[in-house]
Length: 308
Image (cartoon, rainbow, N blue to C red; front, side, top):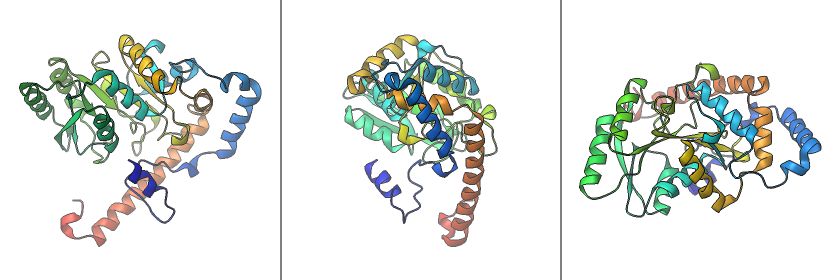
């Protein structure tokens, strides 16, 4: 993780390794005005410690974003975090013991490898195809681990625009994957950092979340890093209330409370016309860059390395 971001920060490198958004599309003047207004009106509150679960306003905003993904949650089922990576850490801390293994895609997000390694939890990876994660391969990986006496607390998946493959899980596989996991007593952890970033889609047309199909079996990780600002470090976890309450304890042991000022700025900006229009412009630029990159690869790289 460290190497990815240190390289991505170099001005002479165009890195495709990290999920760094292009922040030039943000209205910096408007965001600055919002921050000034927040501090002027409520500085004494927003510069103070806050609730370990997060601000009510940020949790309600996260519920609205979940609704765009087809999922329905209450405020008691939303835990704000210092980015979705902190949510992943809290979930792993809560669910995993040393010697456990989780199941993930091959390849998978580098951050989950580091997090699981820190908790002495192994990662078994299963192949992707054109429709994403293969439920039968997941079943076989879980069953093999359990035959070996290894506990499998959860399956980790990035359902929309998977990092690093770009694949998305076909909605036709949702029910089968949920059945594979629920029948074996295994949680599904859905990392949804990219769900709102589909080319040619408005936020209202975004990919349906896996959590929408089985909120009782899925722990959903959300993030404001890709759709607004990674520097603010604001994410959330949507989970059944009894899990969410324990996640709050896991988070409080590290950061006491997610940053109140960051949550207030996210709440003030995301969901406005400025945010949505800026995201639309951003996605159009991303799509053009993607097409240019694919064309360059086809033109300049050997045939065996070029995309079909």
